[in-house]
Image (cartoon, rainbow, N blue to C red; front, side, top):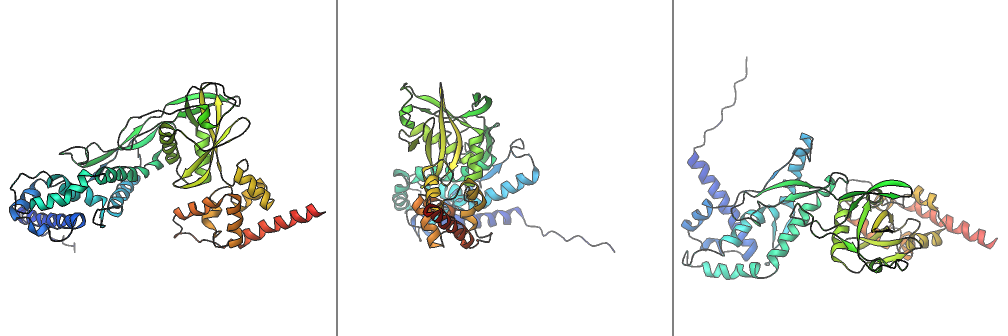
Length: 412
């Protein structure tokens, strides 16, 4: 006997609308509590609340171009992850409360934008509410929080970075932060890189121009120009500022060694060179080492060389790699060589993430003495909850055995 289909209970449009009203009023009440405190929502008359309901802001949605994310399952997952980030990531209000990005971009913005422009005499307590909301708009809070939101969301697009195709950016033009009456729809766009070819070590290689790519646009902003003095070069006579490029190889090495996205490094370097005059460098014979920070932690160097009319970032060295001051100091303290470092996996972030180096006082002390301590702090940024963090005892024995052996050979 065939199963009967479950009947769908009919809900009238009137009841559906009443349920939607109730849900909106609750979200609006929550947003007001977060922004200005409890008790103010109740001062708003029902007729004003109904007007608010009729002009409420739409839920934020993401539209995806299948030319950027080709696979249908990946597009579905991207949307799910995007919506989860909107619900999870938080903005701190001036009351010390936190409001999710999803709430901020809908009811939060509604309160800040609409309640600040209500017609005079709309209801008795509106001036009091306006006064409480004014610091959000008049001060730096609003602009800084919107910028933070753009940057935080943009970070997750760095995984879609493609050296040859371009960087992926959100298009925020329809958000209510940008456009009054916007659909609150976010889309993705790929911004092409400025690629040229350069002969390096007798091989023609592709390089990409560095510059500032604003987080809420789809066009390059200020392109980067850098002088020899800024990079610490003393043997380059010209004082002219030259464009700066990066090899694909440098970004691959960055990703392999730092366990961070190449796209993140590309954008951060461009921003830095476009707006920062002073750079921390270590000058070599034919190159300079440009210190690179992940957040506040120095994790390594990009190797920069001069090529007639441009600068090129050639490769990336983690602090522990040979050729860096810290790597050479570590080599001096432990007597390990490049092969040892590779065996111990300290030539990339793998060892620092998968082993409890910081829990071994003697081992962490030697890394710190060598100047590699920032890598121990940088490792804390990675989610280690899903991996087995192993004891660093075997690494410690290996390193200090090498030190002891070297001491014996020196005495002989």
